[in-house]
Length: 426
Ligand code: SPQ
Image (cartoon, rainbow, N blue to C red; front, side, top):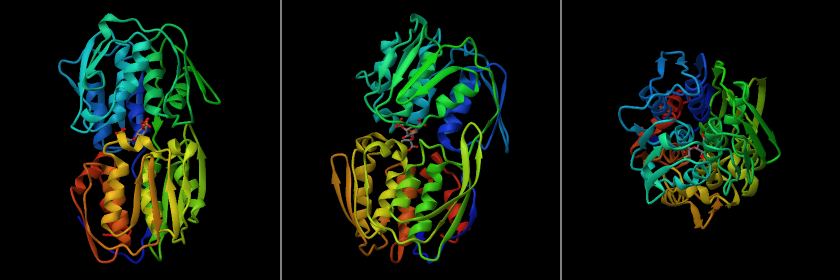
């Protein structure tokens, strides 16, 4: 994909449904009693992997243009799959499924693509084993994972998460649905709470107070339709693009603004971005329209408790920092090293390729912004968020750039380049 420097991005857009909420809608719909109609579902490869796994376990799932319908089989209705479950590139599918599969009375093996086979799974194996699950993985840590559900009975635990991770938290909560007794989780800092919100909406007794979440196992989950809001992680690419490209004004409709996800808005505003929110709605998940206009950005410090609230947006925030005046320090972001790629190393290499001044640190990077950036051929590391971040960067670089292996965007945003074109950007 070739991208030229642009002198304005303008228009009103919708971005696809939230990836985290789409996964959870399928998973919880599958084990609920009754039918779940999902609108706004993200038809990206990761969420399609989740659908595929549940179909293999006997759940009827109808996919049409405007909705996904899950015919729930109830908490104990999943069937042993005839073959391995394949989770593709999706960490969320792999880790959350571990929680559900730990509670089944059958054995199952699960694996994913080359990137998934390198991502750590002991973070979910450890707490699930404490609950009584038997899980074998390569070196106790990597896919393929075999879950010996047939041999175990789960019990609730009191677990203090070693890292703020919604995937670990959700895996433990999902296993907690099948456990005897209460499950309690203590988070070091708040991570996205979509699982808790959806479980509550489905009638589960789950309480969050401060950093503590307590779940009592239900008899059943009662199906409830889900309207998936637009994904703030996808909107983030246009928030940054609108802020750094001259003569721009972009409105993004109906974006999910759950406070556990809005760190990107807080940080961009702290950097001086002109972002306004309007048309607030409050359902299970809050939404609003976001408008961004060209802004004069300045450097900032991004670290501490905000990190889990913007973890997936750090690559594109690094792009914003490269176009900002002054220094930006990203710290406390070790987790970025174990995503689809090592996102610290990837962004440092690619931004420097354009002429930015970026240094890698152990837990983030230091960006001295405001340098003149020039078009280049950008690698994408088979990582959707690196591809879209470097596409945004390319819009502001002198001359022409090329994004290699641009199709990787289909993991979370298949129409990304079409939307960019609609705004005048490709
Ligand atoms: O699903 P996957 O591959 O882990 O996706 C990513 C992403 O960039 O889309 C991370 F690579 O998002 C995670 C996110 O980083 C999705 C997620 C969730 O839905 O629960 C939680 C975060 O991961 P973690 O490890 O912090 O729990």
